[in-house]
Image (cartoon, rainbow, N blue to C red; front, side, top):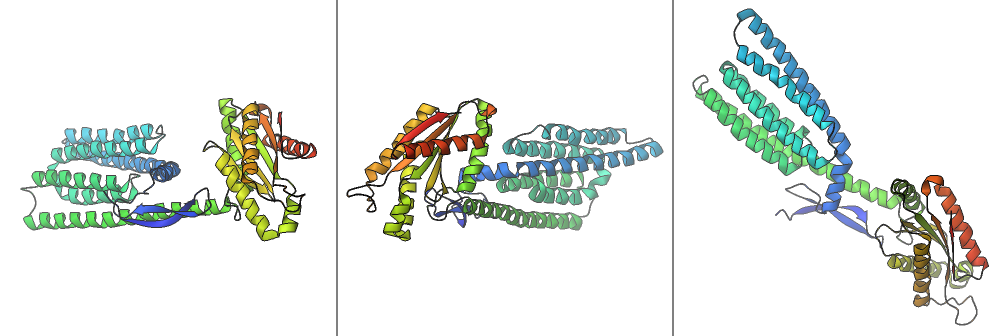
Length: 394
């Protein structure tokens, strides 16, 4: 197992501290399986586009070769088998193109590439068997295909190495068998040397390219996290909330499930800030943020800082009753923390007010309407005496 890694800051945990995204040194993959999966999914559209271009080019080259072979056959009335074989090679990339356009996952695309290389190798060896006079072209073709496997095919590094190795051994053995009596020994040895050089160069190039792609992906994750994380509290900021609200709104629209939003405000925070100072006020907000994050029960639930002393909590697929329950947990968590509020009468403790809005059918409303209702319910809770929750449904 490859345990040597190069690490790059690539994502942030809930606490806000950057965490390393490690790239293994020899197998060239992201150590975290989920991050590696996300990387491959992120590149899938581009990878498939490259495969489509490759198959179109292969089809064009096969057509040209067929026309050349047809011309030769018309002039000499010989080589019918080679002509038919060359005609068959036109349909391989066209059939691959039809299948690739229907592929929807990176793993399936990678499997298609392995199958395409295997079938293409068999067809090329068949052509060489039927036309032994072309054996002198085979080393050049082998080297070209090796570079395509290493550098162009959208497969993982280890898979590319295995495909290129098997192809080199099988194709070279077949070439030596066909050309045994047709080429001098020194030419065969030089071809083998160039074949080894092509594999070494392809190995180095593919390793560098695939590592670079993963490093850039890790850096993009870090930038995305920095842009969507509140610098003071370490939780999501308004940007992340807006993105999550739009995403969950569309998802709940497809599933027909409700979506709830909690708008949370720290009671009398201006008085707390004026009395204890801004540094203590910032520490208070960090503590509140930590308590809110610890109180949510599902990974899909998002707690973010909305602005100032206001926080939001997005609850996908949660009804009004569930939203009230989560809001009650928030209020109890702050109460159990027993944070002193010296700006209020003796023995007063910090409290929060919560507005809990729920949309049962998001297809008939807008995200802005849900936010407006949550904000309205929050101020209704504050007018009713604070330290409580008000709920409502669109």
